[in-house]
Image (tube, rainbow, N blue to C red; front, side, top):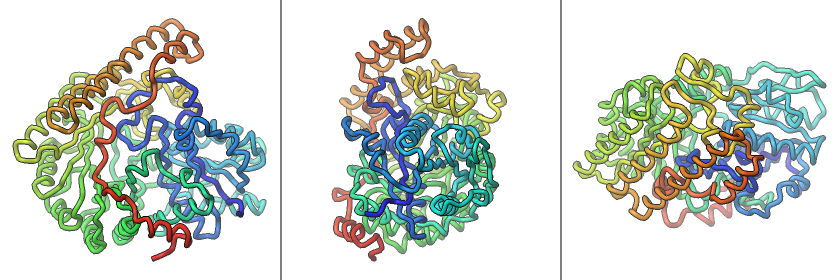
Amino acid sequence: MNEPDLILLHAPSVFDFRQRRMLYGPVSDVVPSTQVFEMYPIGFLTMLAYLQQHGLNVRIINVALKMLRSRRFNVEKLIKTLRPAAFGLDLHWLVHAQGSLELANRLKEAHPGIPVIFGGLSASYFHEELIRYPQVDHVLRGDSTEEPLRRLLAAIKAGAGFGDIPNLTWKEGAAVRVNPCSHIPADLDALSFDYRKIMRACARYFDFFGHLPFKMWLKYPIVAALSCRGCVHNCTICGGGAAAYVRTCERRAPAYRGPERLAADIGLIARYIKGPVIVLGDILQAGLEHGYAFLRALKRHAVRNHIAFEFFYPPPREFLAAIQDAVPNYNIQMSPESHDERVRYAFGRRYDNAALERSIFDALQLGCRRFDVFFMIGIPEQTPESVRATIDYCAELMGRARRLGYAKCIHPYISPLAPFLDPGSNAFEEPERFGYTLFCRTLEEHRQAQLAPSWKYTLSYETRWMSRSQIVEATYDAALALNALKREHGLITAREAERLARRTARERALMEQIDAVCERAGPRLQDAALRDLMDRFETTGPATICKKDEMNWPSRLIRFHPLRVLRSALSGGEDG
């Protein structure tokens, strides 16, 4: 077998999580991955597909997943067997700051002559600091680095210079060079979101689990379809907002996937995978006609998979009716962040509760099977009292739904803004203006924060209205109240609610004891008393603030078309 030109590796959030005892808390309860964030970004797929189209061989190794699956898995042993032209690591979500840098360090120790390339939004934001780590050779900036990566690999293989490669930050001896960020595609139509490419890579490298996106994917094979890169909105704390994209990627307008191509992506997925498909990004950002064109195209593909749509602002009833006409199985999710309109406006979402409720109940009346509503803790203007009132609002929504005959159709969730405030967001750039106090500003400070003994000390901020301790306490209080409400409405069983309550109580007890030790010695895991304390508790495991699989959308009993998957993998991924 020929060695790959590039190996893309995804690290856990904390590299030695299997040995290190720490209280992660509810940092991943409302996302598919576990507390070590083993889900790699969708950019791995587009980079693999783009480079394969240009004659390069690419392998994905989800190191985090392999470490999760087996405590005996030896990362160093694997690394020694790898001989690509270059290694690529993602630092997209800042939560991977410690794990990705440590994995890069192990790669560089084993293969000092093989270049290590970083990319992702967080890598782009911190590129000038990141490049100064000795284990980092190149940083590709921006949200669309497929072509710059191709050119960089060509230069590496040819032994050529890097001065003309767009979006590249690199080292020339002891000097750091920053090339212009000039590759900013206006649309996403040149990219391939063909999951058959990953199927083929699994077969080519005899590595099935290395290419899986997260631990429970085989049981719950959710797949993403990307509608855009960038955003027209400018939410205060979002690192993917309009202003943040200008700062981080120099992107001044979103790049959209054409409606026909986006629908074709979903149609192709449905030929092989029967699991849910989430359409990432609000399909109305590009305008109503763009959204209608997508739904017309999607209807022609006659997709039976469950489709999840996310909206940043309440969609009109007519558009909801068009969704009902185009897709037989779907749900909708929105993130109003708070029931309090004043808090929501401070966050950057400028719509009122009347508009939100109108869209929720219009959707249910038209046939939507489920409406997920997400709230957040740790945002501007929010107090502990406001958090408690958000749960009361959830009770009102669910009670109204039950009275109208839509019992169990509204699924509310609440989670903390954790562990970090997004770099590049307006609040990160001007914390005082938006009421934040930041404990971490540099990449290294964030990396060090991930080694704290509990998620309270990892939190990179507090607000004018809530301290770190209050954010933690409000999170646990809200979780207990919301789970009791879900039990009342039949969304979870009494047994499940009791399990979550017990885990919350255990975490709170451990948090109090950690605080007592840290008051004496500081938040250092090296302290012997702290190590002994952590060893007596389970510090990783099931979700705390919600039942993890409650978030799962419907998936058919047989989740794949096995013969099509096998034929595609063995034929190069291009079968019809």
